[in-house]
Amino acid sequence: MKRVLFITTVSGTIRRFLLPFANHFRAKGWQVDAMSHGISDCPECTEAFNQVWDVSWTRNPFDLQTLFKAPQTIRETVSREKYDLIHVHTPIASFITRYSLRRVSEKIKPKVVYTAHGFHFYSGGNPLKNFLFSSLEGAAGKWTDYLVVINQEDKAAAQKHRIVPNSRIRFMPGIGVDNHFYNNARVDPKNGEEIRRQLGMRSADSLFL
Image (cartoon, rainbow, N blue to C red):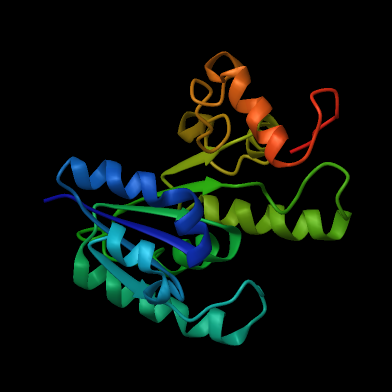
């Protein structure tokens, strides 16, 4: 049985974005696990995944517990479970995970995919902060098998800074909005008028959602 582990900093990211991925891989017969801070307290997560693992870290990149305790949890879990694939999300979890696995034995080392939901360095950002985070992403790129970017600016930045070779960059436009479902042609105008009536609005009133 193939095994995949999804890792994020907080469980909210998994609950909001990654449950369809869990369903997809489980339907194909994979063992699908997840790791994040507080995930065992997320009922949707514990139901969607085969196993969940709590890890002690925060969104603060300078938190000592994040830097020293989390890597041990990651290495122990990966060594024990022998995953084929690890899919990391969010900057802190992604960097710490890749750093933690950089010296894992090749016999058990899984493929690592990093989906960047927006780099912490960007056009117009603070120059010092941009330099720091682009340097960290460049270092972590050495421990990344594939980098997934979800907007053109990040794709261009990944290529400019050579975070990974171009052949290992994958562009995915957005993170899953179904353009067929969210389509004006599928909406019955009567339903729109009913919602306006419920809100006490007239047909001519402007409505912003």
